[in-house]
Image (cartoon, rainbow, N blue to C red; front, side, top):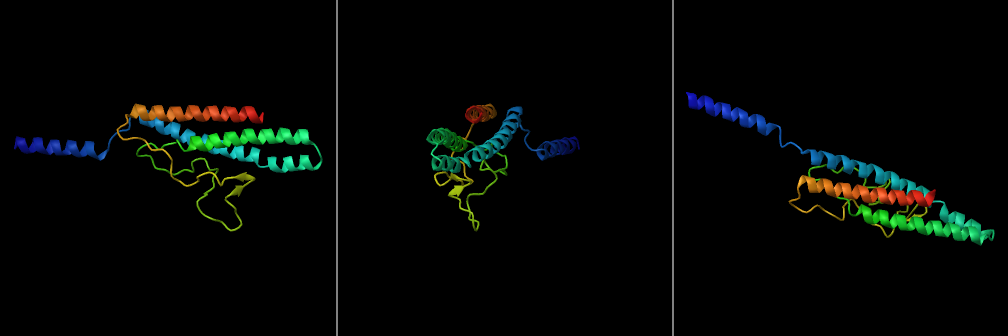
Length: 177
């Protein structure tokens, strides 16, 4: 009879502990918070970059039409600097990796646009004056986490991605100010 009680108690204990599933470590919780920040900040940065770049081509053309080559040259220089930031942004976005077990339900910095399908009257190759033809806008990331990383290593990767994004954003801010 004691054996049955012990086995029943053991079975109840196993059921209670198994129903809760594995607990997330503090490192994984922090990594997920960082990843969500990456998604939000990168989306905002991409939007700001597109807004800054959109009028430049027309402004350069207008300056050339009125013969203001100095202004046209300054605007072309600004456009080149912003183009380099855009390339760096897209290179960075290819290194962003999901956290194991985290659902992918965000846009990965493509400014709320799905570039993987066509809309009538919407040219994906030239969005708001910006040529997206050289960028990969599918939902697949270029990088994946290797198997066997510790939670602390996953957190370290997310922190490094955040540091790189912060640097990119600071460079953008210096250009547009």
